[in-house]
Length: 470
Image (cartoon, rainbow, N blue to C red):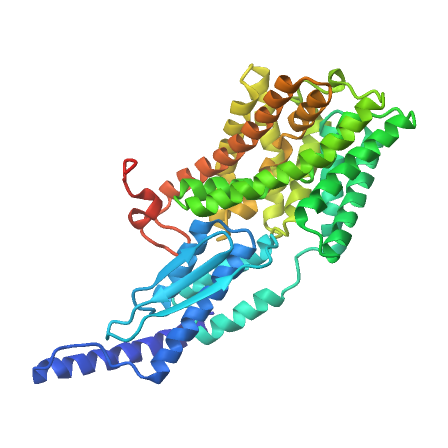
């Protein structure tokens, strides 16, 4: 690294000295000190720098990064590689970059569309390191392209089998957290594994993701119904809750709230619409199964659901830790983020349980716990020069509202429409409280730091402009 920095500094100093000498000669001769006239090589370098910024932005957006951080990264690359008066526009599915030369040449504009989004936080962290190194002058353009190709070709940090089993592990741990035992955990594990593999098969056949999620949720709840019909002594609600927890959209919800707070309202609305369709798919799959089971006379009763999940028991804390770690693995988070996920998952459950024991309402308890533990996670992310989402998103997994969502569906199936809608609203409000708590922690850490991901001035942040609503 020192040798690379030395070569890069020498080359940049020589180039700057040459430009300065030419400007000085023109000033002595009485000619205006204008920049060097562009040539074909300079235009080619401009197009290559634009291509790099667009590819980096596409990779960040496809890996699950928030819109504001994608725009900030693209602006950092534009400044690092000398793109004149560049503007980056990022939406939910597309990004564009334009630059206007200072010599009156036609402006250049490029655009890329994100057609396939796959959350991969390890790749996200590697891309952020590339942007940071480029912003401080450690990587030239050719080396940046080489590193970007390596990032795209890199394998996930975990074996494929472990990533496949991460969702079933979330379900098994969540079922224990919901009051189930070993048999319930096994049933929830098998149900989610079958649902996930069925969804993968439907994806290969070209079926839309909405129906993949609906079928997966229906399979999880159907297996619970079949276990009840077979007369096995299990808590059916824990099985269904575990299956729902593995599919709840915690990641896009956090990104949606962050986009809304940062002023990217178009992307925020699109992400919220994505969350709505995911929840609608879960409601459709579980609701149809539960409705059919209730009208067939199977003993699915609202009274069997746990009224409060707050408990300091070691088994519950261990289950919360397992949920967070499994969630981090499913998102391909970096290995350095796993200890934070483990400690943070247990800590957020303990804080939430402590607040519930003093009669703080569940929604407020979830938001406070997410803000407190999320603050520590944001600090860890800053320490490791990694994107915050890789450290904060897995923390909220133990508090995702699987039980209120199932309770609402069960109440609606028993013709208690008003009560069921209240339960569904409680589930949605709890999820928003978790996302808002994480976002609040990020704002506090941002105020504590001097700059953003590439060292930009906090005062120039678009979300910080005082518009007073106008």
